[in-house]
Amino acid sequence: MTFSDQPEYRVLPQAGGPDAVACAVYPPRAAAGVRPGVVVHLYGHSGSCRDYNMQRAAYATVRRRLWERGYWLVVPDLGGSHWMNDAARRSLDAILDGLVRDQNVDPARLHLLGTSMGGGSSLAYAMRRPGRFRAICAVFPMTDFGQWVVEQPHYLPGIAQAHGVSPAEAGTVLEALSPLRQAAAFAGTPVLLLHGDADTVVPVHHSRDFAAALRKQGVPVMYREAPGVGHDDIIAEPFQEEIVAFLTAQPGA
Image (cartoon, rainbow, N blue to C red; front, side, top):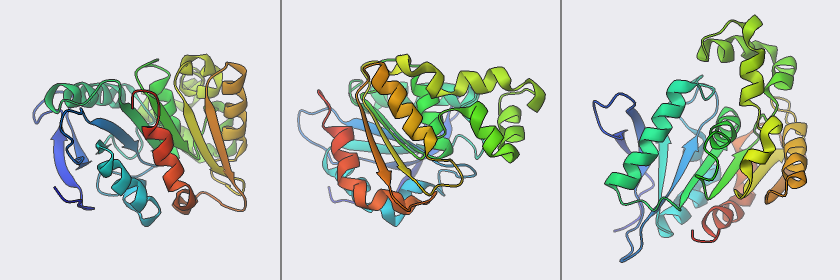
């Protein structure tokens, strides 16, 4: 089997299921006697399974290395403004369970890689599923949603709508989404954070503060800060080998 940098488009976990969604899928290189792993990529705001961060040139090496190392790369279309609502969580649960059941994916080799909204949402999902993921990479994530909507107030109505509340009632939702408030939930799950210090969309303190909170809880965390880089996928390009090594080199990965 040769590497293809063009995704397949499938409905997962199965067409017609209540939580099934369209996905861009990069199947792995098969290895005899070894169960594959999976990296689920959650894209940024207004993205989709046909327009996502991981398809861009800055992640080209990541896509190829995951194939080489026997990992599915799956990009579920959870909507352009899902903000990890109940429907998004149900779909992710169903997709992961389906990959383990239908594709023989190793349940000990499940990983998340999210960017921007997808970075914050990856962390928000993982903290509700403690111990399920081998490792997580979050690229310029928001980690304190209450503070972030003060910094970027035009996102508050969309977050509130995704969770079925009014902006005035969103405080509890924002608190519940915030990984910074629940760092202990990541116990035993290594986290890689990547952020640019010139980011004006999600200020860099979101990753700095979360890294500090994880360390305080004894959670393995690797923090990489890119000087002079803003909210742009180009941030990943020089860190691609490190991202892949981090995700695939965990014990049992």
